[in-house]
Image 1 (tube, helix red, strand yellow):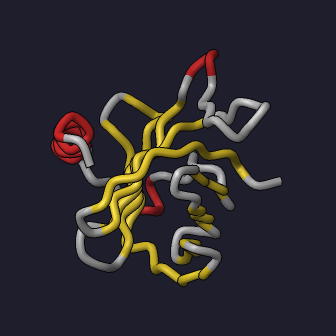
Image 2 (cartoon, rainbow, N blue to C red):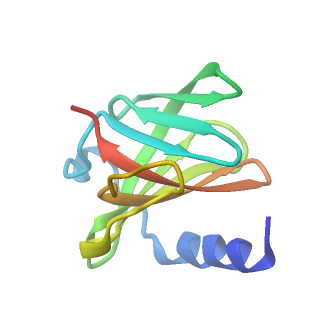
Image 3 (tube, rainbow, N blue to C red):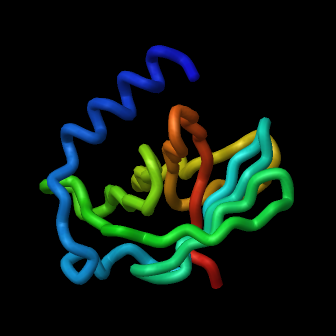
Length: 127
């Protein structure tokens, strides 16, 4: 993980006042997120459950809380049970989020922290 990405994640943690899951119903669920190099996936099924996939091995995660940034209704923080396990989901605007493996831009960008690791990916509401 680069020092720059660690700083961004740290600043995002400070910028997010935590709002209870019931107060953040605007996060469309299920939400499917993924990234490449390395390949991984995260599906947030609802306000209580998620599935993280690493190396084709699905692992259930429990959602502890969902909040959003003050004044930013399209930026969310999802905290999962486990040490330093949270996702920051944000609207990418008109350009959308793109990874090297997709032809179609996704609606949202994602920074996913799992322990000491930090991953960057894209998300779309699952249809």
